[in-house]
Image (cartoon, helix red, strand yellow):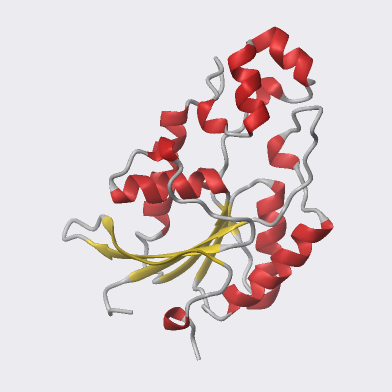
Length: 215
């Protein structure tokens, strides 16, 4: 790690409870037993990074994952709304039939594919706004005085932020992040103090790279 670099470990939460019949309140879905076990494993990996700051999406599944990390490193997570997945309050509690009636077949198809990038619903956050939010959040987290930062978030914000930082259209979902996996990004600050991505150390890995482990 170069002296001027800041490292960000981006962690996706563990597996969460999900209903196949009703659109759940997305930010209130807890970890499954499998997801809790995976969170314990990824927490052990993150502890070897020895972060100076720990941030988490306010979603329950992310907070539960961050709590396992916090137990390992002795540091309380700070909630960062910019790390949230897109949340569609207008769909909460609706069955698939009700979604089809109220919002049409295009929305129902996107719901079936669980690809919220394709959802366009009046009154809910647009995809473009979510992408901008995700990038700005990541840039904000690495702009401070801390050089080793962890962010617990979701697959969507990870893909949007990495794509935007690399100058790639985020809609392609090129940068996948599996549940309870890590991506490690390195940044340098410009002369104006703005962070820019200098390299991708690792992407979508279950284990923390040896090059960023602290002995």
